[in-house]
Length: 286
Image (cartoon, rainbow, N blue to C red; front, top):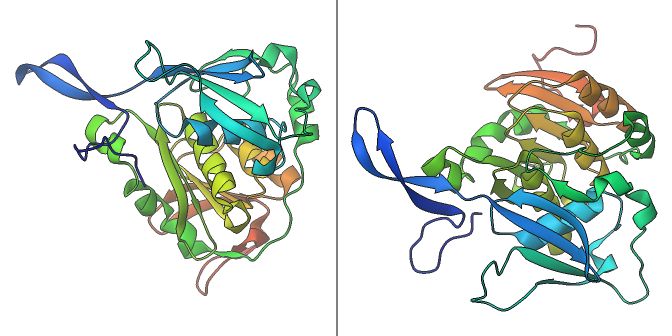
């Protein structure tokens, strides 16, 4: 699932840097790349985020969907890096062209949200959490996901983390179908970017309607639930802890929030009937 440098087999998004390791000594080491990406719409800067280069089109599509600026890939006419290959900084600005007849509803994006967004920032610049809570839609009903599919998620995710294996410096996200098949996976130095990349990739590939589980490597935060809800994915799973706002939003959006997914253990919050619990597993009130 990872992009590779042509001819080398190494994952894209990794560079070598000089290092002094104690007690091993001097040498060089694999380091995860972090560079800015400027998203432009009709020549105007929409946002700048720090990301791991690669899958920039996916990142843009996922960001636009999570912000409510598009409803489907059909709302976007073209995505293209600005400038020419070989120019300094080429690849760090992406022009988004709306489809003929479509206008991005920028009134949905607060003026304070436009500008620089850190790689770890999901709600930077937002004025009120209540506004976010109000705009998140209820996720449509879908087939319950067997809990073992979710419990296998961390292992499945590890197999997609080629950059992390070399650097230890990236987050990962993956979208799984109800049977546990990986639809799209991505890595990034920013956990929100990793989610935007997989959502955008699934949108571009026409696979988003099959997505049943969003598996993430970081904590289950408010922003992760918000992005899952905007993508209409009914289960968000994480190896780490949830936050109070994440649990509250999961309940409002009708998601199952599965935290602390480690081996056979898990903590289920939100809408629990999104999951199919097998025999021997505790049920509501049990």
